[in-house]
Length: 343
Image (cartoon, rainbow, N blue to C red; front, side):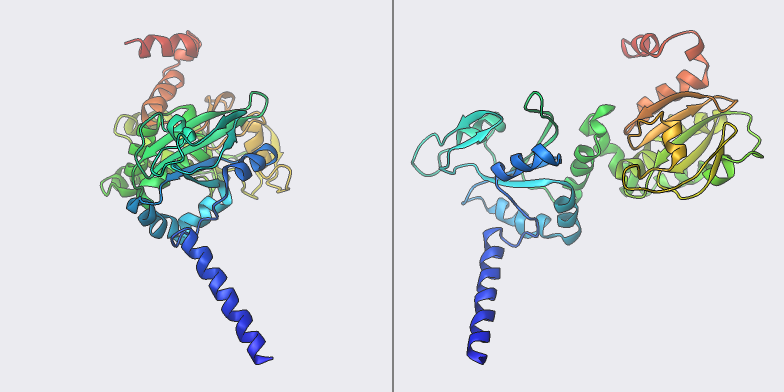
C-alpha cells in the first residue's frame, strides 16, 4: 500500500514538473490558438498571442519572470485567452478562415502565421493583443503589438488598455503616459489632493444646493482605466483649475448599494447578476454603461452628455470646455471638435 502511494506521488510530481517545464515556470494557463478561437466564439475575451522560439533566451526569461508573477498571471487567466505560438513551428493552422503553413521543413524558418501577424518584423518575444471579435465579419476590431521582453510594469498598462477598451478615445502611447503619471509620478499626489470630489451620497440628495454644472465620473473598484483617468486626466495642469472653478466633481461607484435621489426619483442600489450596476448609474448613462463613464449635468441637473471610456487629459479638456463655456448652445460637438482639431 505504501509503495503504491509513493509511486502515485512520484508520478504526480513528475507530471507537475513536466507541466512547469513546458512553460518555463509561467503561472499563466496557456492554450492553443485553436482553443482560444473556439472559446472566443461563445465567451468573448481578448486574446494574447505570445510569439516565441525554442532558442529565444528572452522568451524563456519572460516566462520565468513576468508570466510567473502571481497577480499578473491571475489577471490574465481571468480576463484573457493566452496563446503561445512557436514562430518556427511546423504545424499547419487555420486562423480567421485562412490556412497558414511552415515556410520550410528546415529548423529556424519562420511560420507563415508569424510572418503575417508580425508584419515581417521577426523579433522574439513579440506579443500581440487582440480584442473586439466581430463574429459576423470574422475579425478582430483591435490589434496591438509589442516587441521584445515585457516586464510586469510594462505589460500592465497594455493589458488594461486592451481589456477596458481605452482605445475608443485614446491611443496607447497617450494611455501609457497617463498610466505612468497616475501611479509612478510622485509629484502628482499634490495635484490630485487639490481636487475636491463630492461624495455621491451627499450630492444626490434632495437637500444638496448646487450652483455649477457637474461632472459625474462613474467608475468601480475593479475598473483600472477609471483609476488612471481620475488620477491623471483630472489632475493634469491643463484641467485642474478650470474643472475646480467650473464644475462640481462627483465620483459615483457604479456598483454601490446606496440609495440616491435624482430628478425627483429614488434610485436604489440593488444588485443582480443580469444588471450588476446600481439604477442611478444606468439612468445617468441612458442604460448604456461603459466604464469609465463621464456624465455632464447642467446647473439644474439635466443630463447634457454621457461620454464612455477612458478620456486622456486633452479630450477631457475639450469636453469640459465645450459644456463649461456653453459652446454646446451654439455649436454641435462635431463642429466644435472639427474647428479645434483642424488647427
